[in-house]
Structures are given as C-alpha cells and as structure tokens.
Length: 169
Image 1 (cartoon, rainbow, N blue to C red):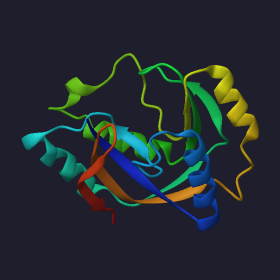
Image 2 (image 1 turned 135 degrees about the vertical axis):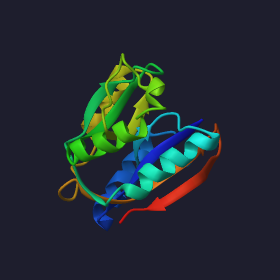
Image 3 (image 1 turned 60 degrees about the vertical axis):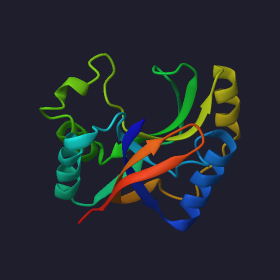
Image 4 (image 1 turned 90 degrees about the vertical axis):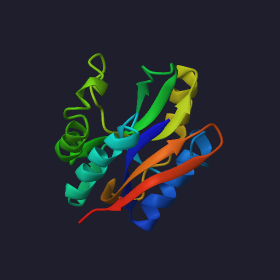
C-alpha cells in the first residue's frame, strides 16, 4: 500500500519521547518514523505526478500537537494513542484536500473525516490502550514540530520503501 506522509521534525528531547513511546507501543515503529498520514492510498502511475505537483507547491509547516488521547481505529479495529493536531491542522487539511482534488476525488472517504494526528501506539483492546496511556511519561516540552518533508511510501508487512521524497520550501 502507498501512503503520503508528512514527516515532523521535533526538538531532540521531544523526538526521544515520541520514539520511546512508539517503540514501546506501535508495531509500525521499526518500519516508519513519526509521521502524519495525509493520504492512505497514494495514486500510482501517471496520477503520482499530481501528488508530486501538490508536494512541490507546499511550503514548510509549523505544527502543534495536543496531549495524548485514545481513539478507536475505525479502519482495522482496535485502539490508538494519538497526538491530535491542534496547530497547523488547517494547513495539513488543505494539503490533504489538494491531494484528493479531481481526478482523485473518488478516493475521498465520505464516511470518515480526515483526522490529522501522530500515532504513539496501537492496541487490540481498549483497556490495554488505557493502561499504556496512564503509563506515558509527560512530554519534555511543548508538542511542537516543523514539517519540511513529505514522502510517498510503500508499506509492507516487514518493509517500508520510500517512493518519493520532497523537501518543502
């Protein structure tokens, strides 16, 4: 499967906190670093040029995340611990909408609104997510990051391959 992701750059102490939480609780952490997914299935072939054009037009973004919270995974079942986006959400939402502009508007998920976030953990059971959430140490500072890189990545069971990487700005 192909995804378009924004790669946040955190200050070193915050990056260490995010990495430690993800290493403990997110089975995808060995395959992909911290990211905000903008598109769950990136277009293939000629349509990928549209993705690339959208990426080239994007300026760097300043993001701020809210405190960790538990959310239900409406796609695969189970539960997540998320850092919800509270600053820069409108700008990431605009990138998401541009990615899904015609001729790709058929890819829009009309049942589930786009919820930009950074995943810290995935759990099958709600009580497991609640226990992990209670044990998370507080972050070492404001949950802020800069996005200066967008990527199209192919995610397999045991492998991640970057198909397209674009520095912003």
